[in-house]
Length: 284
Image 1 (tube, rainbow, N blue to C red):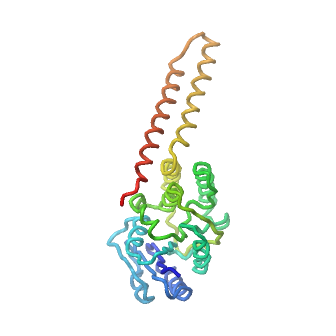
Image 2 (image 1 turned 90 degrees about the horizontal axis):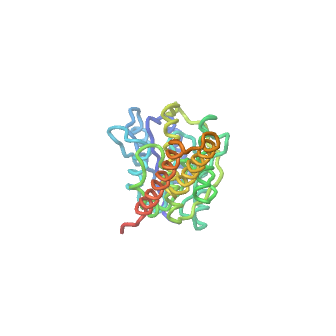
């Protein structure tokens, strides 16, 4: 069996780690366990020392994605397991991820059901992400934003430069794997209620919702987003033209503006498509 490294980003997750780490060590005694302490102000480092696991500490918080990148660089295993440090993910599911990975996949994601979502708002947002990503990629995506996944280390490290320092590393890595034709699979999991206070903030997460929607498209195929928008502007311009022509017998500035917007949006999509292609060019 390939050597496994389990990477957990954690920020002030001391109470959850006290329970999780002994369980994790008991179920996977041979795995390399790395806690990436993202500027915690609690006793995270002491807990890690007592549990006998590696702790990479940052002097200040740099974000969940930054912790994932740091952990991926430090890990020595050929297989990386990413899971949250808040106690939501069951260590027993790691074996299921590994079994699926051994079937020839490069990434296996633990897909949460509706009951495992962090509230109705988050559930609706994740359902929207999954639907849009499925439409754009042509692959059925069951959980785009799940942080519980197993990946082949060499494949994952190809995309470290793409990963943001914030919270959308699952989205970015999934779209990157699909774009590069690395097979991705999903297995159903049950996520428990997190230990401690959630870091979710409605306004911040609302903005993040729209940013992730945009990122889904630009990371895979921008034209699949920009072309429909361009066509909508085109038909709105035509509809406005027919209306004003039949009513006043003339072409209005609004029709011209809508047609111009249609052309501009299409050209932006075309340029974005070329930029995306250059982004995924491999550097040896």
